[in-house]
Length: 268
Image 1: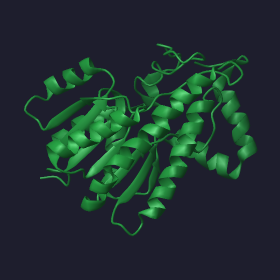
Image 2: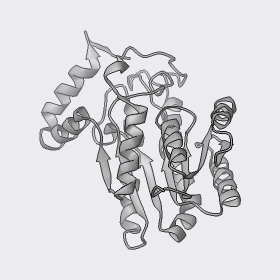
Image 3: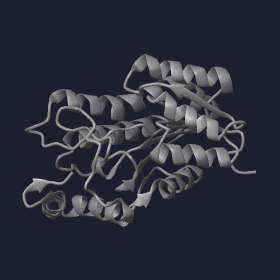
Image 4: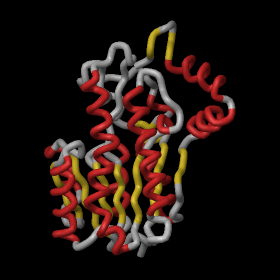
């Protein structure tokens, strides 16, 4: 029996990447899991794989307030309460600010920031009653602004600030609030990243073979939940970036610029 046996765990964006790895891990540890996503076919495929397991799927776009409300209400109706909420659903972008259309920035903010706010708002009373855990998957981009990712960085900075405020508000409630900042992770997020017009790029030039896998990332997140951590930054590169930006910001500017631009062009 694990710490998560019979716990009700909610993972947004659980049909692929880190979210899917979390869903699979929690089911293996005996938890009751609920997840949502925009693509019903991917959710149904996941449910088919785990037929007979306590997995609830729900089609929802987390950028839509009413859909988040319906998702949380469905979970409480079926499972009775929520022990752990993991705000994982997210989207990235790759475009210089001078080229990007403002609707693309707004879309990134709606998913990454408001999606977490909506789900947490509607789940909060249940999590307070169970003295549970609220987790948001942030990014190193929430500590250090990244070129070509202005909207993404802004959404993650906002997420970190909101989570820190929320943690302080709930400090004496018994609820733990944790935000996790993975570095580059092997997942579909880069291929789904928005271009300057707000459409999915469908490709990436980055070599994902050397990146942390979604499964590795999920295990770090689960351990952090077990230990009721405040925040974790994953990967050496991520920790190095946060450290340099805090103590040597001008150097960090130059190193980040060098990493993201090759021959004067933004890497995709």
